[in-house]
Image 1 (tube, rainbow, N blue to C red):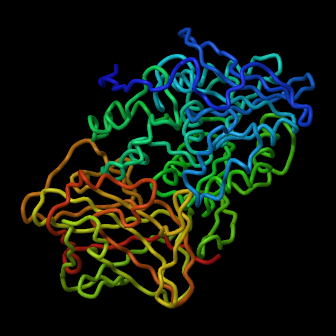
Image 2: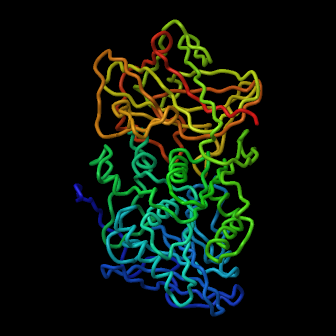
Image 3: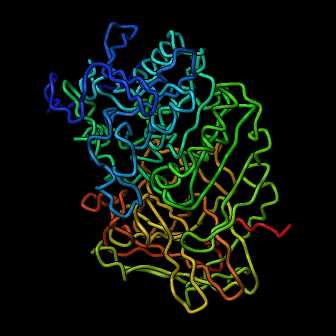
Length: 550
């Protein structure tokens, strides 16, 4: 039984129009040999009609279907969302007139014998009903549309799902419902835990939530007010649980793509999805580049996967490595390496102890206790932080999950917002910037976050190298209290040559504030001084995943 009340905001767009790029009816593109059907109504089990665009080969036959589901507008890429992030490497002009944001371009698929179905979900862009995000209702609608697509005269009865970001999240959600005609999924960097990976990071609210519903979804009636719900539900509860897919129920073949370069949005959720799904046939590919460029550069790889599972073609997919990782060295430099599992079974988790006196990281604990502190009263002052570093004496690879254990104290507050950044330092002492967040080029190796009152661990789900927080209650700090905390650093990969270094920075606000997931500094709990205790009885350390050479 639901224990929460959904908050809605009124739609701002007329139901009868106002949608650039709409072309009702049917047209034929003779050059591509493709029939395009626009605004086709599909009736859900409760009678609500949602609208889809269908792109299919002009030659009559039975074809596999690739379904794209997101609230950003199925209509012919009429709005150039890529232009909002000019450093992303993508643009509307790189796609055909049939393309869509973050999803398959029919011009790339229909000539190869596929039907593309693009959906405006319930409440978005003129589809009937109220717009919600990752709700049980959206999952039911997804089930109904998959079954509709799998039983049309032009369908061969096999449906796949495809796309990036929201188009990846919906794949986890809909696939967990196991619609009979769903035959394969290809989630390309999609969150799987709405609370921990999108709306809150370590209990700190992300400003990314403000984009929903926003103008990208064009609600005409009512839309779920995600920002209001975040304010009403700062802890993990039934509301947030209702948005998360039961990943263990997913059994269809899955080609999962993650990146080291999407911390704060999709990295964690994509790895967790791959680890938890029950599919016997599943593959994981991980890159360190910008996600939209990578997605559109690998359409042929996507088609190979669907050729096998939607067309039954015996092809090279059966020889793909189960896990294929790009081992990063610097921006857009790295080599892919095949592996058998994730996390890597041969990982050696090594503690690097924090030395407070000189800002060191050491493989040996420090016998004498000390403190490092910084002021948090001005969140814009990035010079106020605590840093700890080391130089690698030999070539070292770090690939996998990491965590930072700290003993902390707040002076002047009963809580703390901690932001953690891992950086690679080159042999000249300069920070190595990396692609990040789809459009930026100043990212680090890894990020981590924690609101200290959220420090309570989920003992069943946590591992020594990946702490998982309950987020069920707040445990405030008493004056002078020193507490241990464990901060999850999202999975990363980096190769260090001898003489290159690793630096961990602990700070009271976002270090790279231009990035999409900038947190709400206005409502931070930070006041006064943050104090880190290390050495002696305080085993503050960074646990890193060292990969031995084969």
